[in-house]
Length: 168
Image 1 (cartoon, rainbow, N blue to C red):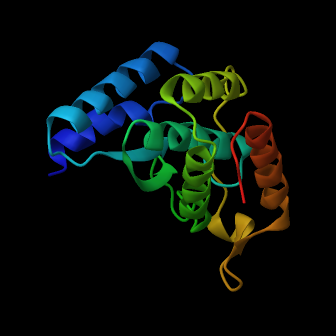
Image 2: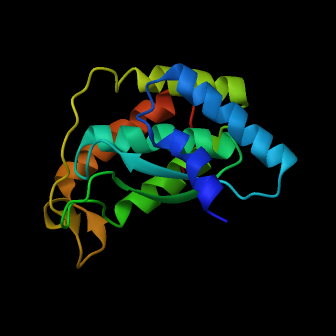
Image 3: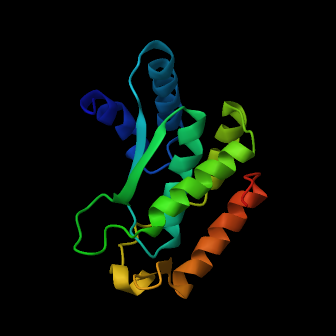
């Protein structure tokens, strides 16, 4: 069943800077997990697009909250349809990496909330960055992100590790 799940998971699709909204989403997810058999998914309909550092940060906020709130992961993509600039294969890898690092850190809900709050501050006031064409940011032949985007990825990953997430 995705109708209702999609509606409550939609709370995760707002850029992760609204603290009250994140808290309400957490409460709803916990109640659904505890009192129903509905399988919840946390997707990411994002404001920014592939190739931008802000896009990686938006994804990370959602993927820190998802395992803490008992949600499964689903695909992330730029929320506006754009020919060949909505997502790359890398986003799924990044989502899983952040969720695993969150679980390895053994954060409780309060600790995860603090990490999200501190990390979300890097998003506040940032203008939306449109996505780049997939060929500009992802090497489809070798199956990896291109060096320019990899620099941004490493910077975001380092910021998350400094806040306590435990990456491989």
